[in-house]
Image (cartoon, rainbow, N blue to C red):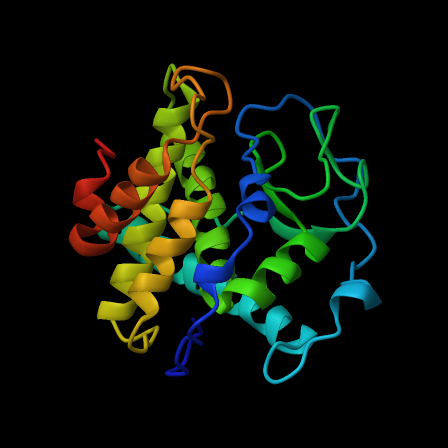
Length: 245
């Protein structure tokens, strides 16, 4: 899924290894600051091992998709805040990393195979090798969903939204990511191809909590069915379906 009228590539979500994406987590309530006090880590690049891509699965395309997803999220949320008479402040930084402990949030090291939003320092961090590997298996839809979900956590922070249970925060972020993508398609900022919605559904089903995970446990994101339902509720009905108050 890309901006400017380019269509989303098809056909790889169904083959996603569940363990690859299920490792993702969101860090919503840290305390402290990033590892680099200036907030400017060295640029990260995918390792050679995961850049043996062919066709359109290139590092350059991945990098462009990340930039497009960030830009469109900023445009979308700026529009929403303006429509409600509020000023909008974009998330301060979206940064890649490669190693355990390369970035931290409130003294907590951000592990590999992860993507997080750091509340205290207002940044999104993502493991570039893990993300690029998922990008190759899923396609560019994964990049836009991933950035949309983490950006939604930044919006929750800006709106002062807090819940008693992690799952409430996470399912709302899924809904908000769906609204962002659905509204962007309806406004012609994004173009979908046939089969893309099926890819979103397959991907969301792959990132649900493991069977038996208590819904009230810290870190719970929701069952596969709950996550898919929340995303498509937002996708089809926009933000009115996301209980933003």
